[in-house]
Length: 311
Image (cartoon, rainbow, N blue to C red; front, side, top):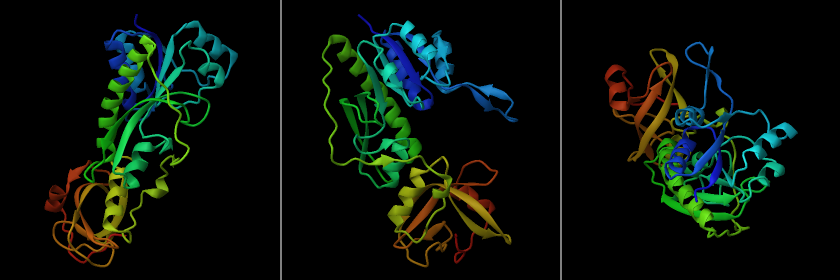
């Protein structure tokens, strides 16, 4: 029989898993997500999360509690009489009493190959660290930070061309399929759990705005991975003197390129920039107050002479 599930998630990353679970016949008795936030042009209207939008379209009851640590929150959670809870980027800590409520447990989809990159920003950190592979894992949750026993995993190569957005979208789709398979195994009583390794633990700290400025003194590969790991948000940036003023540019995509020079120096007419070792060629960027654009389009309207320095 299909499972009675509580789904807990917030951003776009979680939406495919919700849709796949519902599409495979599981009964989603409630969706928990974060409360709507002010948005829109003037920040006046409350904007629901992507998960809430999809849940309401599917006719699933939506709850947005500010905390799960009260007796009232626990009673409401228990009242759903769920077999299991599925958690995907929910953004709120689940206390032990909540974890103990579903008879089969709570299962989290995490976007890394645990125990590497436990924590808030595994996709960004994986790219920024130069990892050759990433992946998704389904784990049975405990009260630790992504320390639960692993049920299933799917691996994916990470190339230098991938941005955080690219990897996010791939892992979101792969993860949805993985969670569906995990719930099918749980339904059959055949879900096997394995303890995480004690070696290789790393933590994916939340991305801070102060990290976004590009350090051109680093080797070209490190600069490329930094740029792609922060693309499109918050966006790695640098400043360049144009028309007598310092203009901030977010660099969204780039590629390794031949060339050497003083770090940050523009080497040619195609936005090849020297790094501490080697160089990168900018292929997509965003000027403050403008939309993303291809470097070729930017250069058609803006003269960036060789010899100028990014800083």
